Image (cartoon, rainbow, N blue to C red; front, side, top):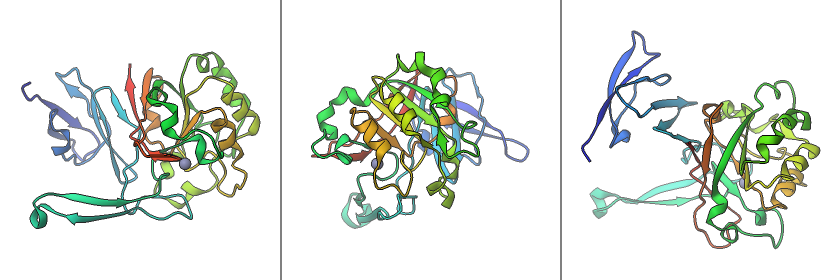
Length: 273
Ligand SMILES: [Zn+2]
């Protein structure tokens, strides 16, 4: 297939700006700024975004919902930062290869039932179909302002949709604090009643834009237990949920194939239908 170059007009730069994006090799493109990038003469809608210093992408009908793994990324308090070293470089070894050490619940990741519940399924026990399916984003960003809980009353209006979907993503707006101290405290938590109600649907998974679905000082992990007890996996630290407003999408969030997996980083993306 021939390479196709499309024009990207980048808003938000003083005086505006224009760059050429090679659709076959989008990583070669270095934007000077982000925000709205209307595409001329192309069926593919492309937008390059930098949020909180992190570069994320929307390419065509695929929206990246994942955080970048790096040594200085935010991690759950008490665990250790990822360690990424370069034992092999092209100059030294003729090839490049990294050694990566990280906890299984680092960055955008999935919790298996076995994460919290003894004897419960590991990720590999759930089967591949459990990691892809129809999704819906519930926008709670306004409901949660000044509140530390997500109530059943915030969710009930979505009952009919929940009956038809396999993944529900709760957009609380907390993702905007990624990289700041506020990300780890004061985020909204589902009440037990709201969690039990959500878990009563046939959901494969529930996703959030926060560090955890339970409060940071919990020992009980009761909200984790409610979902994982139903084999509804939990996807934490999702990004870019704002982009899903009003969109019908398929969520794809495959974990690494790790033996006896209690959790794994995932590359979560929404494929707009
Ligand atoms: Zn986790």
